[in-house]
Length: 190
Image (cartoon, rainbow, N blue to C red; front, top):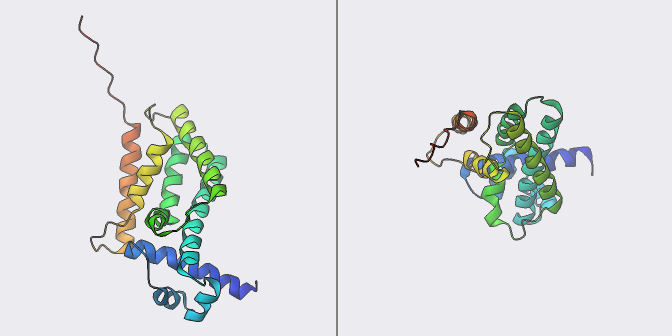
């Protein structure tokens, strides 16, 4: 594929991610093309149907987030900080798109990405629990579902950047809460 065609394709995917997060659902194709600065014919050449475009957008956000997390595992020395940084970067990479688009996709199957995501979450969460003050009953599933909640648009009309800032703030509250000293069970009375 020519370099300019590759750039157009990439721009269409990135704009789709942006718009899905802005509208909280499936954006119109002409809106995507206009924001990407290309004609509607260019969009159809790269993505002949809506399913192809939505799959590409979801896969892009997931792959980008996983790749960033894999890099953090290798470079961030503190387990809790690596988990926190991963969750923040996943928000910035548009991970919320995966959750929003999942019910719209006919076959949301990405076995290669699922394997990588599972290994990443196991590594991040396991390390954070072992090394840090995180509660011991924290699971990968807890982190995935919390991240989904933080990544979804609030649908209350906030500007996108304000909504993103709130998601990051709430994410920090969540991680800080997971690190707070956990109450110890009271001894049983005889």
